[in-house]
Length: 225
Image 1 (cartoon, rainbow, N blue to C red):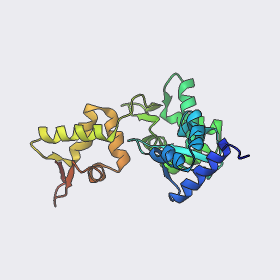
Image 2: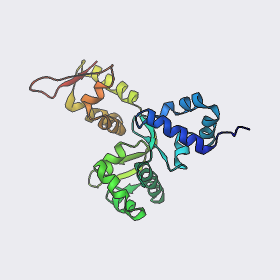
Image 3: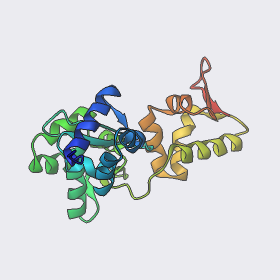
Image 4: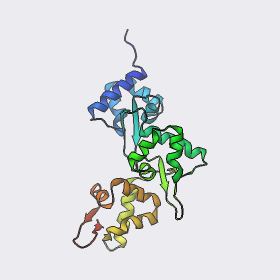
């Protein structure tokens, strides 16, 4: 009698898919690929609450989420991963009433597990760490070192594209590059995070066909449709 696939069979299948995809399996393709292999494998993931929650309970794999909707599944290579640090930071935020001071992030995480410090440092600090994980948001306030909180509403790249197109139109078709981030931030603070996460205005425009970044000698360039 053939045995039905188990949760571990689903883990093994995901590891194989991750390796086949070069180490990162697009989050949007996880269920589709599992169903192609064996529908029961996908059912185990669904019963856990989806790919992300399935990874939480299986130490071999982790689900990485980034600002702008980018996410993927990969092998958990280290004893402590960035995914673990995100979970620990979210717990700390909750215990602090929703806001954790920027200056306390590394210290508090280190109290939970010393290895978390190296993960934050490797990203360039708390602010940059938050910029690459859509669950977290680093808020900068004048006169303070800022704080970290849960990202309450996810902002998509398309939201930023639409806002930028409107700004371009209001600027008679050309928006100076130096004005892109300040103007977007006026509309919504977390638009800046999305652009920063892409590597800046030029790289953001390169990734979206509706926008074009023009470089001119003697100026910082401009954005147009």
